[in-house]
Image (cartoon, rainbow, N blue to C red; front, side, top):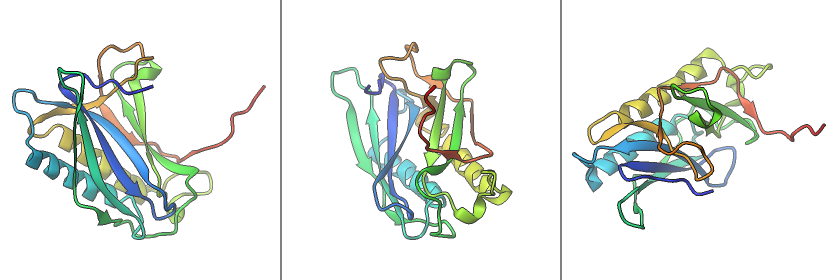
Length: 198
């Protein structure tokens, strides 16, 4: 289902190529735009470059990060789209990563308990040396993940922007984007696995 982007909100889409997987990886977030002080193309480029820099510390040196696409809701039938940002190499310390089925998870929480009021960001390059046998993430890498969450939250609360939001699709009971009040890494990695059928 397509994501609904009301006027005053935008979807942020970051492209990266992880070191452990030579395929494009697209990561998305939602944010609110200050319609009384909207960002210029230069402001969007500044935001994009800061996001690319922050995400680069989660991607191995053989990978790269950028650019960023902004899709903003407008009063008319067509959304506004703008792609910007400098592509840079990953700045993580190692290219020795877990397979793509193992990813760190950054949890988005709102003040609501419903499943549609939560979200997740998946981090594709999970350094093998930073993951313990039980799937726990060691404290140093956990701090790196939290640094990214804090940086992104700060960007969303900066000039021209009014916060980090969860955007919804047409199947959601939500009629408006949901405010993210907590953005932090899970203590254990997630794994992609087949569902158990009873």
